[in-house]
Length: 231
Image (cartoon, rainbow, N blue to C red; front, side):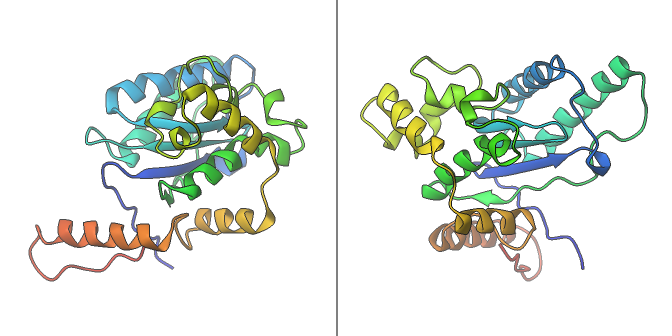
């Protein structure tokens, strides 16, 4: 079966899942996690994308980002992956592939789906049995999204669903904290896993229709009959 085409349009929100090659560990010590976050911050500035959630696990990472006109999701992940790989080989005196060949990047609609995905990402360590509550895990965006202090890496103020939770960012953080602490329902987990399997995007029907329209308009710039892309 051919791989589905990756849809690259500025202003879309993507759920990125990138795994270690053959599911090997990509973070071997506690120092590796903050270094990856520094790489993330560096390329966030270069490509102008927004970060709504993240979680760094032992052998994979989850990122929830919104792209800009300055870089596609493929360019962003490639730059981050290369930078991390170079440092990994230098630090551990290794060679070869560190990351798998192709990452997952289903589109997420900027509505309740986005909020659900944030909770899914930040609850990864809980589902993995590593901690009992997301606040116990150090290498996710839960602390930045749930505290009243200004975040370092996430862009809560640019998250349309997050800022709709309350009248102030402090209120939003408190409401989100309660929301993100509740375990995700099984039906939502199935939909998210389906999207990561390449069978669909994690988005509303209305949003998918809007994306189809954008794709059609984009294809009109090219010669010949536009080819439909299933989203």
